Length: 459
Image (cartoon, rainbow, N blue to C red; front, side, top):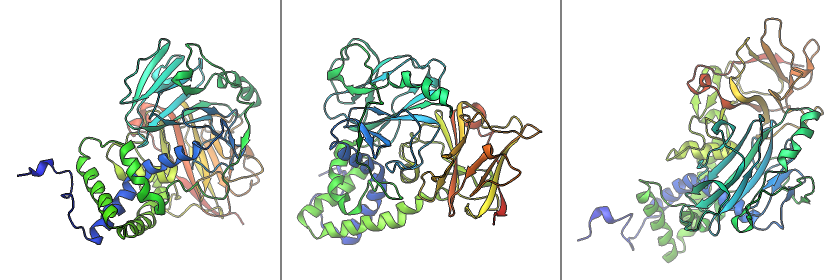
């Protein structure tokens, strides 16, 4: 007699109702959304001829090759929602089904930096950054199942639990002409490539000498997960992402309905419709920051398990939908805001202010910033090319009592310092506060952001 504990899901060949199949796929679409997102990014980048700037603004390269910017990212990029304008970004998608990759870390001296390294679940699996005391050198990233020898000259070795992953170097840069020049020598020493190209010596790349490539346009983020393709892609994603402890039965249920569809092709339409419903009813609402996260004073929210989601499927998909590729909380703490102090939606028809009391700026050893995003979670283009304010800005004006007030509205108002002004769009927008390398006061909850005060219509 078959023991129940050995059965990972429904008994093979069991007839399944349409309603059951529908519910499993509704959940599977929500659960797998971040992993399918990552999978489709790799498929897209496999078509690239080499490193370049998509649309002239986004660093892209074929999988297992890294590309760097030389300045802040431009507002027109559409591959990743909620970018920041405090760091110079790099980007490398990983496909570790073959050989490992080498990632170079130069000597950053006292400049803040961190490399975000995540698996296909968007969980971090490697610690590389100023907060870890990481030294210069070449670091190896391999799949968990890789059995090769680590070459001589490798400073550190990390194993990725999934076939697909990503690396995002972030290097802080002041918003000054001098620092834009100063940072370039270190940027040229950041690169990544397959281990077969490693010769024991660091490589240098002039990131000014890379071509522009076609890029995505429009108002919203690229639709990396499409319900009509989901069922066919789910097979591969399950193979690329092995179950975490305790997920074996979940995988068994999903495999069972996928197998059932192979013998009953009509179930494919049932599944596809379920995926469409899941996107509409479960995933899309989580684009709004106010619909998830831990509540904080003054209507701010935050998540404390970014890039360490584990089996918190809800937060993992919510973050992936609204602002994918967040750092671990100890690397960066993020605070989200859709509402003013009264609980009303932020909208450019009104004037707002955020005041940090004397000695109450966000306590961060790296940097802090307050960024404004439009309703699509991208920068609001403006003539000042100003999308955030914070540590990088050297001309902020403080009040006589030592406090700092940042103003958010559609146009500069007389009597207020223009250096402290964050331009807002005509419609809804969100505010997003980052603290890179957060201090203990943030991590233990003693410091939270001040209220967003609404001063009424500006016209």
